[in-house]
Amino acid sequence: MLTGLDLARAIGYPVVVVCRAGLGTLSHTAMTCRIIRDAGLTLAGLIVNGYDPDAPDLSMQSNREWLARQNHARIVATLPGRISECRITPRPGEPEWNPRAIPPGLRAAIDATDFAALARPGR
Image (cartoon, rainbow, N blue to C red; front, top):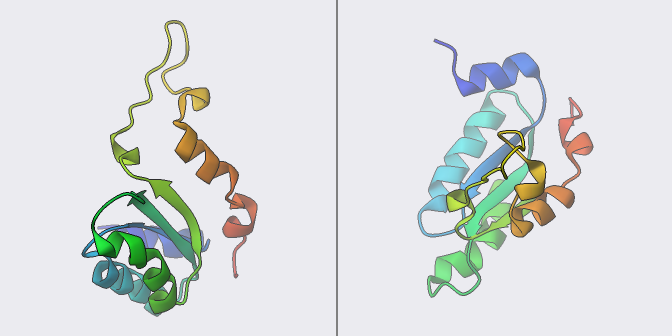
């Protein structure tokens, strides 16, 4: 059975890890990053998903810094809270997926990411 790790090895590009912003993300992300590196792959960085600056959860406020430190990785992008719940609904007559319908917070994160640099093998 082919796994995501097998696919990443076969492709050979650096890997970006998407992790949660809140409680419980530190150990899961550390384990994922270690497995990636132990497999001989390059970790390009982390995308922190579901960040809510107004959340009362203290881990939400400090995890971005800790994730970068703990995993010796840069934060490539931080996506706002509830981004996973955003639905992209096309207008009548538009194709099924419309990049103009991407929520503004996600669009800003995409625009701020240098995908060409992340995709270079052997970084």
